[in-house]
Image (cartoon, rainbow over all chains, first blue to last red; front, side, top):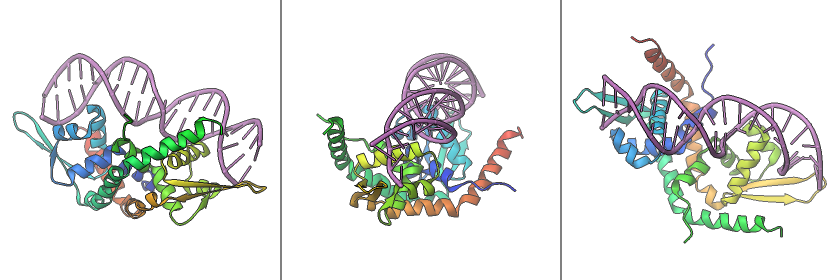
Length: 116
Length: 116
DNA sequence: CAGAATCCGCTGCGATACTG
DNA sequence: CAGTATCGCAGCGGATTCTG
């Protein structure tokens, strides 16, 4: 009896900062490796690993074009597209509340650094 | 010049599997530490750390009751409630597609393990 | 261009034990 | 009950180099 992937693990995959940004980007149509590299910022290694993981889980469709300069495109699968809206909500939220969070942190740190 | 918290970092906080589960749970009203511990499964240490982080970022409101057996409740703040729906979408999705993902993985592994 | 491979430090995260 | 303290390791993730 093959074990089902626990929701836990699934969440982990789709919820990482990497996956979120990548999936959002790939939902607007196929996107190339290099484009992703510029958008996501981080090491090429991690980008590759995340991409592989998402492909393995059936969230991304990898297409290789056997052209002279190699060309590979990643596109979100239907299953992944179901998440698009929710993912956008998250990224949007993080932008909207960035400042509030910064303040909250400062406040928290001030309250905890000095033993009141 | 205080730096704003980059979206990247924000995503990281709200996007962890812990945070998601915790925030979802805390959105249905105040919830106690032990209840969370049962729900989330994982080490107590990580639960505590995640809780602290969320509190620091202003996503959770921590209330301590000075009763004989200590009692601490965590409640989602308005800012965190904005995420509730999106978070539910994610958890729901992970449950719905658990099986598809498992199959996708097996397929992928089969295609890659043996050099065809 | 799109990776694979190697090296390696940092820390995420679990297990366990102790406390107000 | 709701933590904190300590230990320890696996693996995340960055930097760099090599290739079809």
